Every structure is written in C-alpha cells, then in structure tokens.
Length: 231
Image (cartoon, rainbow, N blue to C red; front, side, top):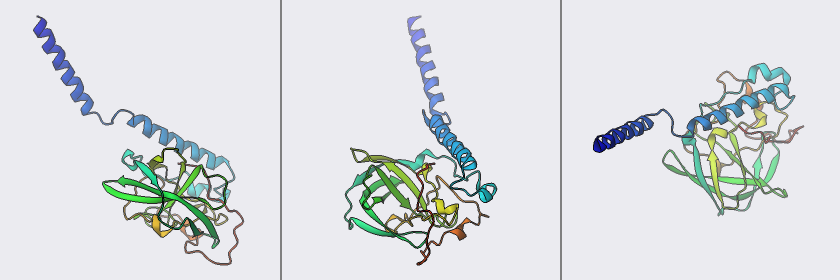
C-alpha cells in the first residue's frame, strides 16, 4: 500500500508539473501585463482631463493612445558602460533649436538575440544626473511608429544594471503639438531592428506634419519640454 501511495503521489506531481508547463503565461507574466495596461489606461485618463500635452481640439483624434500589445520579451537587462564618444553632444530638436546633452554611457543589451547598445543622456549643465534620457529610432520609425522616434526614461542605479523595458517607450510631446521642442535621437541611437513594443501610431494620424524632424533654423518654440510621463 505504501508503494502504491508513493506512485500515486509521483503521478499527481508529474501531472501538476505538466499542467504548469503547458500554462499560457509564466509566473508573474499576468501581473506584469496587467500593471502595464493599467498604467496605460491611467495615462489616457490624465491626458483626457489635463490641458497638456494633448490640445483640447486634438483629444478626440489622438486619444486613447495606441500601443503595441505588451510583450515581456522586450523587457531586457542592460548594463551601462562608459562611452568612448565625446562626453557632450549638441542634439537637434523638432523646433530647430540645438540642445546640448551629455553622454552618461552606453547601455549594452540583447534584444531578440541581437547585441545592441543605446547611449543614455542627461542635459548638459543639469544638476540632476539621476534620471537618464534614452531617445531612439528603430526600423518601425516612420511607418508603424512616430517618425521623430521614441523615448525611454531610466532612474540612475548605483550598480550600472538596468531593466530596459521597451513596453514603456513613449512619443515625445511634439507628437501632440508643435509648441513643444523635442530632441531628435542621434545616429548612434538608431537601432537596426524592429522594436514592436510601447507606443505605436495611427495610420491616419496627421501628427507627423507637426514635427520638423530635420530641424528648421529660426523657429522659436513656446514650450521646451520632452515630458516625463511614462508608458
């Protein structure tokens, strides 16, 4: 009887393990997707109720915001390493203004099996070096996503290790209005892969006309901000 009881227990354990292996989502996946989707809904509510960054006369056109489905494979570990490039860079903006930025380092990571890197910046002369700005373009830019590129924000860590989650990639505020002056991602942050995560763009949207993405000298922005809202 004892041996029979052991066999039954082992069989039950095998069935339980097999059922877990065949589950639709790994442990924690459902919570992760739920958190991202909840934050996206909260951002829609904020943008609908607040006067900025979406102008009142464009809320019906631009809201709710459009996203790729949440995909945890685009949430990858990254290591910030010192950059071999010049420490400062003058970054063009959507308004034609040139904005001095300081390279903090290069984030090295692997996405879909490909080793990649993105430079992280802070504004030159800014006393705040605890928030890293990571603008980027990829092979979806200008077709499935905004032609001026997208942004990620990171909180500085003491270890140099980061969670680089492209599900949090967002559009600069010049997507909503030409009154914003938004940095254009430099060539070193052009990824030669498709990043189908985070914000996407409506096919029929007219917003691409709002951003003079090559930079137009002489234009004067009335608002200079890239926005710190995430998701």
